[in-house]
Each structure stands twice: as C-alpha cells, then as structure tokens.
Length: 219
Image (cartoon, rainbow, N blue to C red):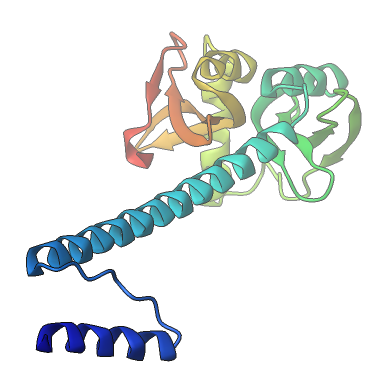
C-alpha cells in the first residue's frame, strides 16, 4: 500500500512539472530495464547525429575541390603549354592554373635570346589572352636566382621529356594543376601537382624517361 502511494505521488509530481514520466512497472527489474533502454536509444541518436555531421563536412570539402577542378575548363595543362608555344615559340618551363577571378592558365616560356614571357591561356577555349615579357629576366645578372634559372633552362633544353610531355604523364594521376622544373640538391626533374577525387598529389617526372614517381618530399 505504501509503495503504491509513493509511485502515485511521483507520477503526479512529474506530470505537474511538464516532464516525461517513465512507466513504472510493479517490479524494480522492469523499471531498471526501461531506463537502460532509454539511455541506449539516446546514445544511438547522438552517434547518428555525429556521423551525419562528419559526412556533411566531408561532402562539403570534396564539393569544394570538385568546383575548383571544374573551373579549369576543358583545357588541360598540356593543351595550355601547346597553345602558349604556338603563340610564343621557345622552351616551356612551367604551367600553372591561376584561379583568381575568372581563372587562366599561365605558361612560362623562354625564347632563344633568353627573354622570358608569361603567356595567359583561357581555360575554356584555349585562346591566348596575352603574353607579357618578364622584366626580371636579365641574362647578364650574376645573382644566384638567375644562375639557377639558367641551369633549369639548360636542363629543360637537354631533356628528353619536355613540359608538355611531363604534364601528359602526370595526367595519369589526376587533373594537373601545375607543372614546372624542380631542382632538388642538384637533381633537376619536372614537378607536377594533381587533384583527383578531392585529393591532391605531388609528383616528379624524370627528364630522361618521363617516369612518374610520388614526390616524397611533399608527401
């Protein structure tokens, strides 16, 4: 009798406060089981919310990378290099997609007299938008930077694999966003950056064989 009065009193108090009353069974074991089940359901709901948040975040990051890749249009790095060399003959040293504003490919070309040009290519059509000579390409300078530039130019001219071929080789790893020469302690090779399925890759392409390997220094 006293037990029933206590249960009735607790139930009335919970209803008066606007709370949710857990069903009390006649035995203590049943009440404990009901409370344990409620706790399990709450934890499952929390875990589901956490998983949903993680999935949404991952999807957002991947979508951002996909939009960036799409902005390059149908013109590949190899296409941009070919268009630049047709407009400004010489040796292509680098190609880079500049995604500021409307976005353009920018190809660095050095001509036979040592003059260096930045040739801009439209990513959608492959049209040459302009070519600007680099005012800092003074071949008479003895600075370390100019010396490195001359060494890279010599390496590119003597290579069996040019910038366009390096871009084509790296394209097997994903969409190429940048290609250029990299001097690693005197060992010069082509270096390329790619994006595939929202993931970025760094690669080296041998000047002689065109073999593509992962750039461990950038891993």
